[in-house]
Image (cartoon, rainbow, N blue to C red; front, side):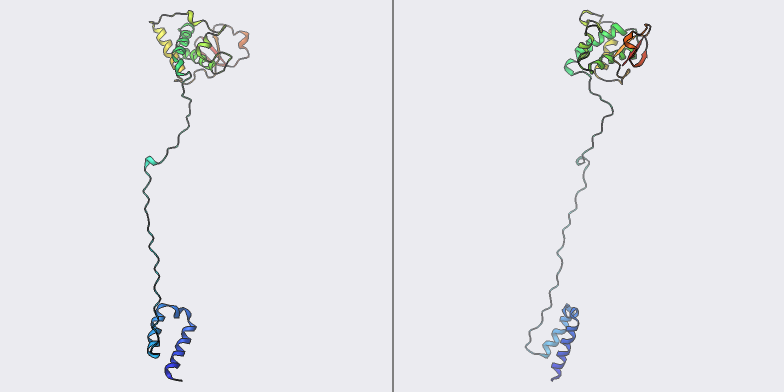
Length: 210
């Protein structure tokens, strides 16, 4: 056997024993010149092209602005809605103010507000008393007919009564007598009707009950 062919056989056997080395680009570059010199006319072995991973385009997202973040609504701690529909506010203030002026003109502001809020409380009970302040105060056997009462509207007592009534109608101040529906003069013995009622507060000359 010719020395050149013995050398080629040895070289091929070595490459077959180490497939990883033979398949690599450096090994092919070493073998190709030897084969070309030993076997003239043999086509050259092309080096395997290197595969390059495509570049990944990265996109930087803009930081969210304050306007894009929806705020979480907070639950209200207190119901601030007006106690009377806007269309009935004027009439409601008028009716309540007449009761406050007649029933509690000599009481403190807090005592007057208690009477006004009691009327509003009755409107929330339902058909038992009436759905509006005017219906409540004009109910038979309860307060009195406000249409027949004409207080002096230029007096300070009327001005205070109107201010207190507006406070109650618009639900501005916290409840003075929470849930109170009835009251009587403190200097009188409680009628039988009040004996089973829960007392809420005593303000000035009035005792309030649920």
